[in-house]
Length: 125
Image 1 (spheres, rainbow, N blue to C red):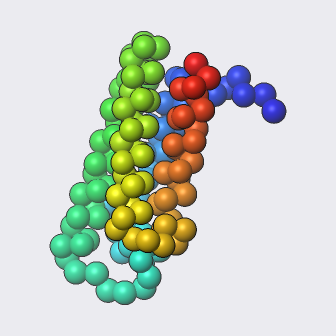
Image 2: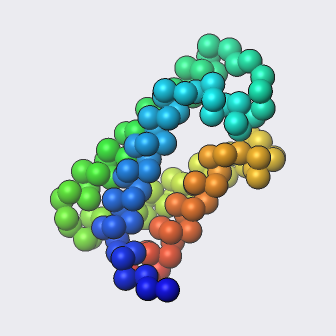
């Protein structure tokens, strides 16, 4: 399998787009994502608001990645991926402590994928 397309910049581009899409989905469909992660119960307005706020944070993360990607500076891209990797690991840790059934959380799969890809590219480059 040829992994030449897994450059720092390409991975940051995928990171930017995926976090923006993921954030938009959390903002637009908070009930759907909460139900997918925690079961089909009814959530109060505070939980919905915090879910939408999380979506906004995801969207912002993607926008910052997009801005760094467009700068084209390889050192800045590398540093951004290091920071994002650390934040993703912390976020996964928080998800595990909040809900022991991590395999039942939809968001965990994408997060683990980001951690694996970012780690691989950073170690390779």
